[in-house]
Image (cartoon, rainbow, N blue to C red; front, side, top):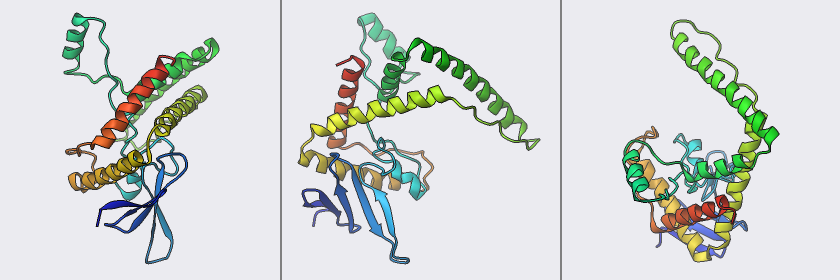
Length: 239
């Protein structure tokens, strides 16, 4: 018997656990419903995407005591495009010490570029407030070891909240565009590899510390991540 197989066009079953995965109409989003035998309630866990997060292809591990795992493709480093040979050499040296921006950061930067002059001023002002808040938290963390004081309250930053909303909207559009181009078979293979990745991660990190070796991505996951990066590039370039 296969470990993970479709039982209909939109339904998959994990033969190891008997859990059912439903592939809904938004192309690739899957949810697993497992019944708790003790109290008869449904324990809803995730397949490809968490039910309360349209961005996360793996956020559900946090509910099980494990660190959240972002498997959307937006956490991967964006491809660096050098202008010439010297630029490529300098970047290779720099990359030994620093990582490039991620695909998600690249999308966010594009969203930030679309702010109006008034929004940009508000955003800049909120950045100054956030920097001050971070200094206060840093001082508080040092003083709290000898004097238990209340942690500084995080300031309201409505413009940052709006940029976060726009970025999430852009990422959803990119994801949906990629999934629209995937076949039923490709979605099934991606589902299968996501589940295998999660099981392997629990073996590598049984205590859920977030450290240790990470499992290798399967070919379907690598292909999906590549498509996300390419679609993000088109979005950034205005295509």
